[in-house]
Length: 96
Image 1: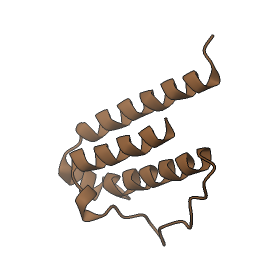
Image 2: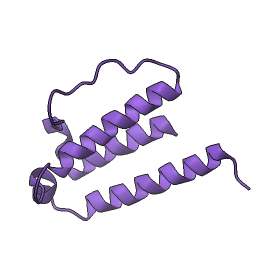
Image 3: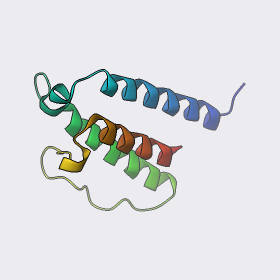
């Protein structure tokens, strides 16, 4: 039987792989505009921010104030599939 830590690592790694594959399967236009609602670039950026806040808590650090007013919007330098995937992976590595 694996430890809780090992199981969590496996789950987070699996989630990362699935999410990054989903991003890779979408065009820039779909990632930038979305289908009906928020753009995937924006909510993926928000997921990365939340991941980093979780990682801070796991390190017993205070993550600070919530950085967004209203909807989270990905900055321009993260609005490519490669950049947003790297940001997401980096945030999940902090958790791992």
